[in-house]
Image 1: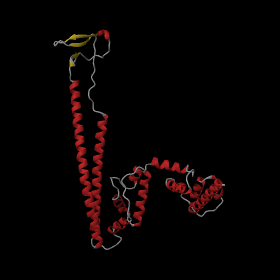
Image 2 (image 1 turned 60 degrees about the horizontal axis):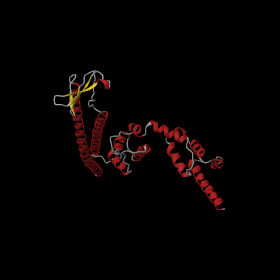
Image 3 (image 1 turned 135 degrees about the horizontal axis):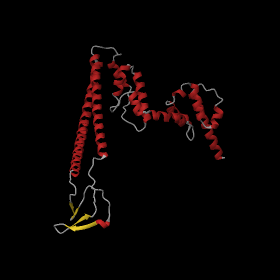
Image 4 (image 1 turned 45 degrees about the horizontal axis):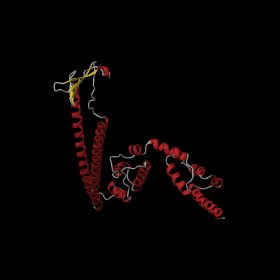
Length: 320
């Protein structure tokens, strides 16, 4: 019974969150729709002006600034000898081209920027709707869990696993400027799901609950936030990784981060040790290469100790 009450509380909390989000999204969508309507009206006005200009007859005098400019459909080529001014009926002069002239006027056109903006706004609206639908689907699934939980006291039931999963304090993911963070989030979520004992068919539901946006789990999420091009870049960086000006600890951290993108090159203890050793400073490699370390951790520990001794020796030489 307590388990059922806990699940109901979770659903109620999600309902309140969904209501708040829906209110914000409705306001945003209404503003986007108003913007699209305004753009459509502007484009319609410009198209009407364009049609009006296209419908003007040949040789029509276009009045302006006290002069009338005579134009027709022939190509315009400027020739000062053929230009002459003649008075209008009101006493003003008008320009007459002795040859067939045309004074072209650029009609208003629908700009590419307006098309791009409308497309962007439409995509934003579709994303908002997709996010809302996904959240509502999650609520419905949680409600189904609560109904299934009625009358069951089994701790292996999905309702209890949801609570177990929440107890792992899973991080919420929205977006990041560093794509590697997205991969870290995905691995953390998978670990938390395993710890909570969540079944495979419930993992998508539980994990997407912590996506603050219309992102889909695993494959699509990975391809979007950790694209293949980035994985290749990280793999190449790993292959070229050297300690350089980094400390051993900094080099180790970078090594462990990048090694995830070259699993075939770090899938055994010997491969990891060899690759890490090859990136250390030459003076450290010369000493450490002859020591049979049991694992990478032992190699790193010895490298840190050796680094400390080398630094101390350098300081002593400077002080002497």
